[in-house]
Image 1 (cartoon, rainbow, N blue to C red):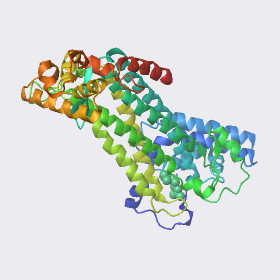
Image 2: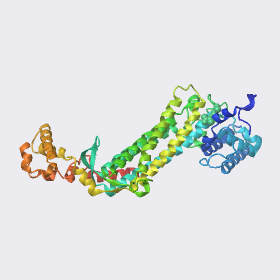
Image 3: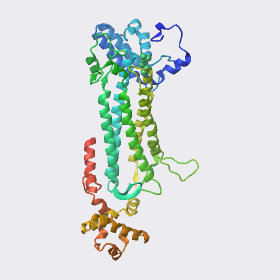
Image 4: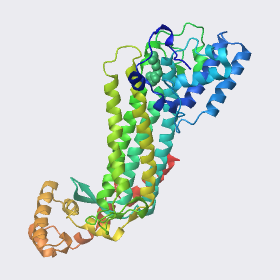
Length: 459
Ligand code: ARG
C-alpha cells in the first residue's frame, strides 16, 4: 500500500531515509498488541457512531484474520513487507481485505497514541513474565537453602574471610534482592497500566470517544489524564528498564560469588557440567560460562536504561521521532533478562556444595577471632580490651602457623588471663554460627525459619 501520509508530498522518500526511518523490522514485534488495540479502537469509534454494528463486526473479523495470517511477532515481518512500521503493516493488510471500510479504522487515532498504547500492552505482559521468572529464580534459591542450608561456608568482607555463615543464609540474601526486584516491577506496572489511546496526535481526539470504556476493554486501569503526556510519556519504559537493570545487577553479584566460590582456590561449590564449558586448548578446563554471561549481560541491560534516559532527555512536548528508539533497548533488555533469570534456575538447581571443604575454609582465616573477643566479654572484659587481647592471640597463632583453638590454653592465658578450657568449644564454626541467633542472623535455627517464611511469601 502507499504511505499513510503521502498526500502532501511530491517526491518519493530518499531510499536511505526510508531505511533510516522505517521501524517495521523491530516494531513488528508489537503486531499482536497493535491488532488488539485496533479491535478496541474499532469498538470505541463504533460507540461514537462512526462505524455501524455491521462494519464493526467486519473490521474486527478482518483484524483477527490479519493477525492469524501474519508471522508471529517473534518471527519478524514477512521478507517482502515494505511498510514503514507495524501500524502501517496492519492497516495495509486490513485494507487489502476489506477495502474502503479498512480506511475508516484510523478515524480520530494517531500512530502517536497507537504506538504508546501498543508498547504499554507489550510492557505489561513482559513485566508479568519477568515477575513469574523472578519468583521461580527465588524459589530455586530457597530450594538450595533448604537442601544445603546448614553447610558452613566462610562469609567475606572485602573478599577476606570475615566470619562463618551458613550457605542458606547466603542464598536467602539473594532471595531478598529478587523479592525487591519483583516489588519494583509490580510497582512500575501500576504506571504502565494506563491507556493513552484517544490522545490523538497530541491534543486529544476530536471524536466522541468514551476513553474510560476503551481503557477498560484493553485491561487498563484508567485512561491517561493528559493527551500531551499520553503520547510522549516514556517513563514507563524507563521504569521497567530501571527495575531490569537493578535486577540484572543482582544477578551479576550472584554470578560473581559463584564464579569465585567454584574456583579450585575457594572450592566451596561445583557447577553442573550442563552450565559450564571446556577449553579448545586446555583439556582440564571447566569454565563457568553461564555465570560469566549472567554477570556480563548486566552491561547491555544497564546500557538500555542509560540509552533511554539520554534519548528522552531534553525532548520537547509532545511526540518526537526520537521516541521510536524506545523499542529495541526495551525488547533486548527484556529478552536477555528473561534468559538470565531462567539460566539462574539451572545454575542453582545443579549446584553441588562441597560441605567438608567449605567447613575447613570457614575455620581458616582466623574468622573465629570475634568469638574469642565475645568470649572474653562474657568473662567480664570490656569489648575494646577483649578485641585487643584477641588480636594479640591471633598474632601468636599466625606466628605459630596454627589456628587459635590449637594454641595451648596457657599460651592464651599469658595475654588474656580470663581464658579457660571452655574457650575451645566456643570457637568451632558450629558454635560461631549458632550464636548469631538474632533475627536476621545466620544461626541455623533462624535460617530454617527464614526458609519457611520465604517459601510462604513466594507461594
Ligand atoms: N514507528 C513510530 C514509533 O515507534 C510510530 C509513531 C510514528 N508517529 C509519527 N508521527 N511518525 O514511534
